[in-house]
Length: 134
Image (cartoon, rainbow, N blue to C red; front, top):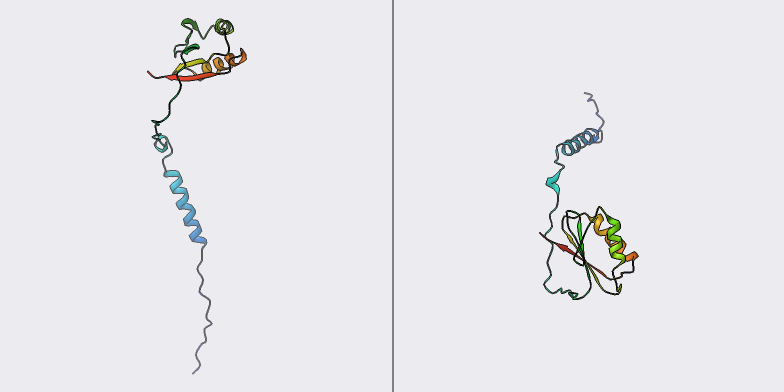
């Protein structure tokens, strides 16, 4: 009796369908994931108790309000008429004094940067910036 001899084939696993399934799962999760405001990270920043700043008693005081009005040493101006503000900064005396630049929290940052630039062009080197909370 003659038996058929079968050759032993090496055992292999086809991974082509596995790769297809992995890519389909990746596409599914990318499409169904939420992308939006829910992924914003909120930080609770630490507050310091040991930091102290020196309050300047004498100096020039400039305050920028969110409606566009500006107080320069208690004289009122408007940001729409910036040439008047530039003249008022030019007329400030004693450029060695500290300038306290206060801005309300919702005022435009371009106003603050423009004011800082104007102060620096007119020789004021020490500017303290503060935010006024409502």
